[in-house]
Amino acid sequence: MNRKAIFLLIIIYLAFISLGLPDPMLGSAWPTMYMEMGVPVSYAGILSMIISVGTVVSSLLSDRITRRMGTGMVTAMSVLMTAVALFGFSISHNFLLLILWAIPYGLGAGGVDAALNNYVATHYASRHMSWLHCMWGVGTIIGPYVMGYVLASGKTWNNGYQVVAIAQCGLAFLMMATLFLWKGNQTQERVGRTAPISLKHILKLPGVKEVMVTFFCYCALEQTAMLWASSYMVLHKGVAVEVAARYAGMFFIGITVGRAVSGFMTLKLKDTAMIRLGQGVILLGIAMLLLPLGKTVTLIGLIMVGLGCAPIYPSVIHSTPFRFGAERSQAIIGVQMASAYVGTSLMPPLFGMITERIGVAWLPVYLLLILVMMVLMHERLLKKTGR
Image (cartoon, rainbow, N blue to C red; front, side, top):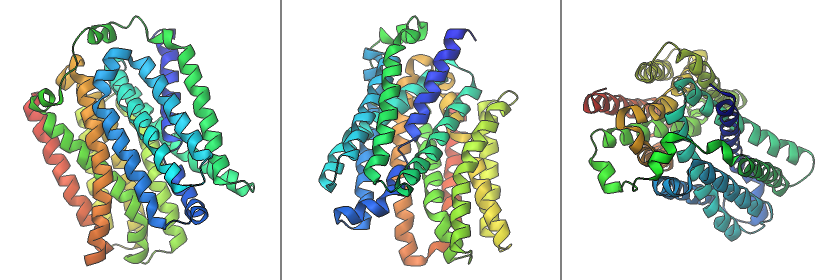
């Protein structure tokens, strides 16, 4: 890899750290935010849903926009849009203003996600895709720390958002100044001369529906486990609240560390093997949650689910150009991102409704059903694409 490619990869990694930075901040600051604004605690779900809708829209439009503007410009403008939205959060003291700023926040996040995932999948080895998503995990760890530090210093949640907004602005300007690094790429130039692929045409391609469902199921499983694991351990397994909270955090750390390790494992294993390995580890973790083997095994099982999640998302993304062709990968990855966000938005609340009726004890069964569907769809994808 030449110096230009290495430097560009560093810029891409920084962009994904910035993508992860604000994601958990709403959850960290909301206990303070909702009281200040005088709205119900449940209103956090409204903001989350608006952000998710924005990411779905920008993901579906990513192929058309990227072909017109190029990956570098799309990424820079998306980061800048996110920075402006976060600055809007930092000056807001009214819930309606938060709703307004959530729109560019979602649109910007989806643009960065789809464009960079496709670029790395097309131009870099599988290990870099794993490390790319590891960088997102690093951002999600830093974000709550920044907010916690600001609040502990006696400042407000607005100041926390302001710090991250300034960091995002700095990255946007850095990306503007380094746009020359993206030029001269043959794949990007070839794609730029072709017409955007319509959604109707994409859905007719063999394997696209299967990969969409695979992505839907993966993100549904990951986000449901993140949201409900702590409640499952406390309410069903009798684990102390503080212990459950600590291990719920370790679930996410397990994903981040797992992706760092997965990058090295891809030197020996191909994407398909990494996906199947991750699914197997998730199955083991769910079994440890489900079986009456004691609290310690339950806690270890949660970490195992996180480790199993680690290689699946980046490996499915990285295999997209191989399965569908580089000229189609941007459009298909955009559709995959949209499916992922839909799964994230719908399935965790659905389990919340199930919990109200039959109890949180069914969490492992719910995760198992999603896993089975994911495995079936992925295996069907392999057969349909013939690779």
